[in-house]
Length: 303
Image 1 (cartoon, rainbow, N blue to C red):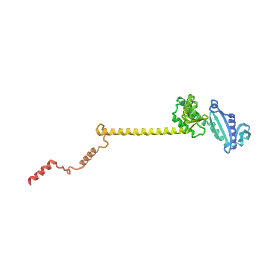
Image 2: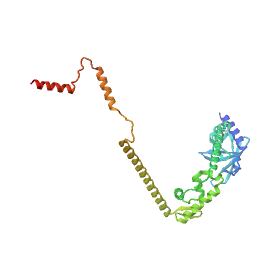
Image 3: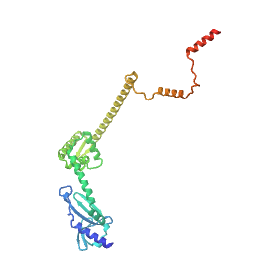
Image 4: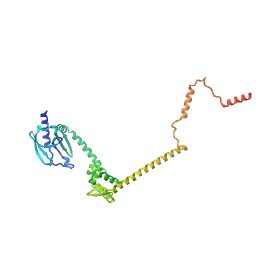
């Protein structure tokens, strides 16, 4: 098993050191998008011990960085490198893929499944950026902008600038929008107007809210709350007036509603069922009022 690990580490280190990364990397540019290079680190207690730059024979040569960032040459036999202590970092364009352990690096590089995920994510980012670029960048209202500045100022002590606001609104997509220059200029003009009104103060290119700005925002929130309450009351009065008009129309017979429960038809059905179940001989006809009256008159004459 030890010989298999040694051969695996030797094969992996020869492959990645043949495409080693330069000392400095540039990301976020067209040149950085073309990167396809590797770093190979040996870990010690979970931290970077030294970086491997070359493989000469059965030895791995590299540099170990001290706390003062000075470097010391390192030369170790490959057989003495633990495969689990090997970390391979693949700088693939503007993305980075890290493998912990030699076996993990071999699986990822041979199957290519991490790179399929990266290509799918890049495709979605391209589509998302295309859709974002087709939309105009709209300016915010004064109170919305002031609320954004106050929210961002709570999370930093260095103030807020227009670029921080753009990043908070749109993420990193704003930098690729074709109209971001004019949008950023309009945003700067809005911030300057808030400074002139006393809601913000500007220091070293950064903006911070003032006490007046906090009071302005509180007053605006109170006015908005009262406006929403008035709307709810008005809609409630409209619903009540509509219900009253419907009930008045129903009482006057202008509007007729279908009967939900017809009790008279149910009582008639029960009487018919009872009469059908009673035998014919047991039925007694009730005397009519006229016959009862004539009988009472005859009795009175006989007396």
